[in-house]
Length: 231
Image 1 (cartoon, one colour):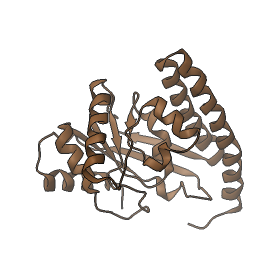
Image 2 (cartoon, rainbow, N blue to C red):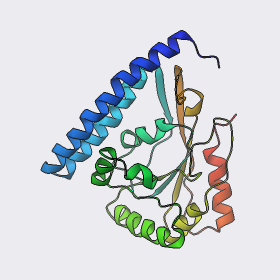
Image 3 (cartoon, rainbow, N blue to C red):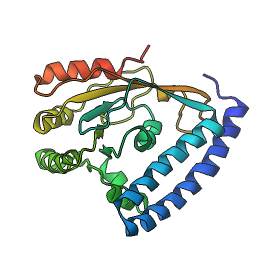
Image 4 (cartoon, helix red, strand yellow):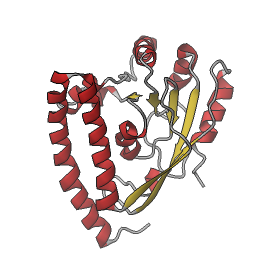
C-alpha cells in the first residue's frame, strides 16, 4: 500500500508522543518497584495501554481480538510481524512473561525495566546452556501462574510470509511440558517500521494444543495456526 501524507503526519505524531512517554513510564517502573511488584506490574501494563491508545487515536489503528487470550501458565506461541504485538503483550494477558532477545534486555533503561518486570532472556548463540537457563527461568514464572509468551519464528516475518519455527521452540515445549496456545497476528500490514498506516490489526487465538505431542506434530500445528491470517 502506498504511503500517504496523512500516514506520515500520523506516524510523526505517534513518535513524538509514544517514545518520550515511554521514558516517563521507565521512570515510573523504577519508582513503582520501590513500592512492590504489583505497582510495578500495573505501571508496565499502563505503558502497554498507552501504546494502544497512541495507536488508536494517533495512527488510527484499532485492535480486534478473536477468542480469549489465556491467563494461566501456558506457553503462548504468537506470530511476529512487527513491534506492535510485542509492546501490546502486557495489555493482552495477565502479567505475561515474554522471551525478548538478549540485546533488548541489555539496553540501558528499557532492559532494566524488563528485568524488574520479569522476562525470559533469549541467548541465541549459547546453545544447550542457554536453553537450560531459559527453561529454569520459564518454569519459575509458570509456577507463579504467568502465561509465557514466545515468538517461535525467532524474528519478525513480513506480512503474508511464513518462516520455519526456531528449534528452541520444540525444546521449550518438551522440557516445560506445558500446553501451547497459538495466536495469529496480521500487524505487519499496518505497523510498518517507519510510516505506519491506519486500519484494524487482528489477533486470532487458536485452539489449545496439549503437552506431550511429537515435535513434528506440534510444530506443524503451531505453524498452521499462527499463520491463519496470512491470506
